[in-house]
Image (cartoon, rainbow, N blue to C red):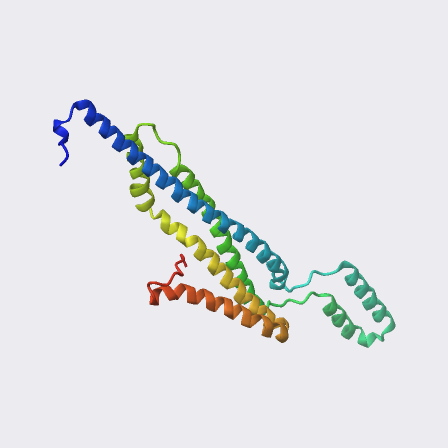
Length: 246
């Protein structure tokens, strides 16, 4: 049986207390640094994927975006040639047919006013939503990374004060303000962005070519089925190792 602290000399009790606080501060500091390092590595991987994905998605949007405004811009040369042709027709035609020729010529020079088809509108909605989700994930990732830098910022050398700051940052800061939950949202945003993009891509392929669509659609279905299975499997089987934020 150990000797009670009250029976120890004061300097032994003080030394034991300082050693315990130093060990506690060292353990807390190590916990914070390892956790922040793991989170930063995950955020860096998400940022790389989000950057590549946004670049690919932007290339598709650039192609689809003009289709939302199908009204052609009047060509000056074409308009001049049509006007000259109309004047020549007016000169060579009988007087009674001048009025019937003029509206036809003017009709050919006026730009057509149409609306984009519902298919292109749907594809644009899916891809713009996907781009917004991807950019949102990137923006939130940068903000969270700044939080992690502050979380592991240096603390005073006093072990008691350092331990108190750890408890303040972790329990009253990160956990109370749901920072781990915010980190779990980031992969979910990118997964949703990928799903929206793939759905729009499938619709696009069916619009352009049935053969291309027949090849790409099964691949997209396999990928989406894999994502759905790995997301729902841990709900059915608690021992399933497919643990992920989505």
